[in-house]
Image 1: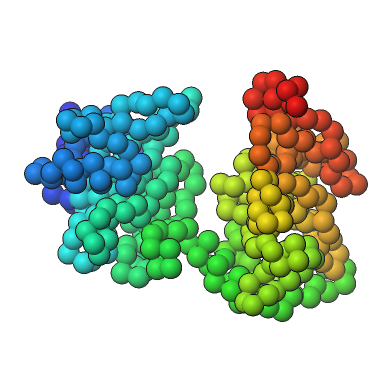
Image 2: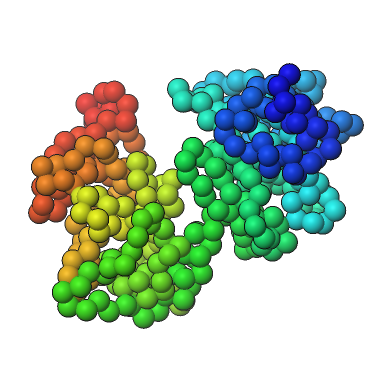
Length: 345
């Protein structure tokens, strides 16, 4: 057994956060996850089942095998589990390390579950990547970094949600609540002047959010921003809702990023759920260059003008592909998520 595997075995036994922290790097976790698996000694089968279900797994009736769904099939998982107190209440939470085998690219996955006031296990953190402790606490809970390859994403405990959330998303929600008066960009200046990569919605000021939403046509109603005559909720989509991209992304490679916003409401948009808008910075403000169903997917391909192609969202497996040759996005082709999807319509 390797040194890393032995260290993780001690972490399983004693719940040592220091040992877990030393292991919380992707390459090290490959060895640890492959070598160790286990559940807290003496935990009843019923509680084991509840703990694993809260983490997205299932335990067979005999309490011996951990399973998870993988598309339409179910596969055996050998998760590594350690108990440690994340929030200082004297009760240990469970940190569960597993490896996602559903895709061709295997990924490390980290989950934290905790007992609520009723003693029921609840999911507090769930993401691809490895976690490690960061400086400080929020709402009594340890701050965390999620390490996914070369990307490091800070997480803090969000009291409102009752679980961990990305720090930039927490900041964005706070700024969204304060977004009342639109920023004014000087004539000839770009609204993105001073923005630096990596871009984050958490860095947008309340005035910048209000300016972007106002350009799209959203209105502030009763303390929140609305679209579609007040029947939809305006927002910046989360990173994982923009396939191949992010809500702030430089689509044309000019160093001045575009922004993607959407409004969500089935009353207005039916099965599509919502509508997105893409805005590009222009002297004095913002200009819309695209809109479509739900949230867009960003493709690697670029037009002759340097803009990346996009695909709109919505229900089904047949969508529209759009290209921008410098005069705004125009539909150029159908895009199939499943072979033959568009021919069946």
